[in-house]
Length: 484
Ligand code: SAH
Ligand code: SF4
Ligand code: F3S
Image (cartoon, rainbow, N blue to C red; front, side, top):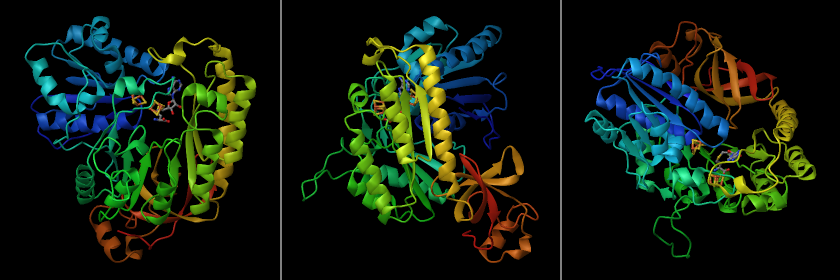
């Protein structure tokens, strides 16, 4: 969950806004665009959820607990609205799409309920609210190219949507119902956005799609060799040379569509980071079939073999669901065995949660809360052990870290990520500014703190890893080999 509420340069004419974001990276990217729209309208980022003039919850409905959280947040704001009728209350995102007008009946204090396909229309929708209407925008909508500049949470790493929606029909999943049909943006629009980010000083971009391997299948064009003209691989080639961008990532990959051509491109293109997020969901073929995932465990293994053949140090992360309807203990153990066999760097785990309108929710063989909790505990322990073992390989190595910010828990440390996406900390103020020369020293004079060397957000710093934990690393910087 992320919150947007820092200072803004815009002169406020409409008061302050507050956005709380639940859910995945798509929602985070949508929130950044909605924040940009609000600022262009004259709202300023507020510092407190409970005094802001406009409160927007960008919601997630992937599991029941994500949905319930929204209702508890809304309850408090509804109370505030009864005292202060000028408060504007907005629910955006996937719960809004799923519930639509029912949400207005449940929380009549709401001004606007808007699905994710309407994020870029926030301005128009708020105008309708200002004219006195209660607005529900959840109809299927062709997503327009956004002309507002997003207000990004990071000045170093930027999200770039490349495909909206999902055409898969995994039997447990609400995403296709709430995000609609696949819609790819054109390579030109994507490149233009990335060039804009580079011009603002961004160093890393993550291309986003729920099923990013589907990129381009709704765009016209066939090559002379008879294959689709627009694929993720072609897109990577088309954006790779944008100057100033040092790192490129993409998510989320689907094992059904992940191609060897893509793996080869990742190995060949230097900015493509050696980290792949490829959810496998289950280590058992029958469960995968019931989930309608469209691949076998063997296919998944082969993808990883190929990745490791071409990029031996690549980090692999995944999502997995435990206690899917009918999952036996033996099937669950196959999932555990796959985690051990592959040696994942990180796995997001979840117990199956029945979602309204999805096929699996009505199936027999729903498992008890106890089984869910037990399996989740067991798998989480294994994920941690595996991740720790993977972290060990960094000990004593020097890794390139892209600095994002100070560590909020220890402001005397910088925080960044390795190319393989491991969070890494190292002490700030290790080197006197005078020890660094060239453009780095100039950067130091432009605002880095005294004694901080020339390191600042956006610097690429070689860090020697001295200690490791399951999901993060710590080390010492080896300057002056800075890139900026
Ligand atoms: N598009 C991605 C995942 C999107 S949802 C993919 O295909 O992998 C993010 C994760 O939430 C999924 O990978 C899945 O592990 C989990 N998830 C989705 N629906 C769920 C449900 N009903 N119960 C529990 N976990 C679920
Ligand atoms: Fe959901 Fe499957 Fe689409 Fe992923 S690919 S968003 S799990 S339907
Ligand atoms: Fe949640 Fe919607 Fe993302 S349901 S996971 S916010 S697509």
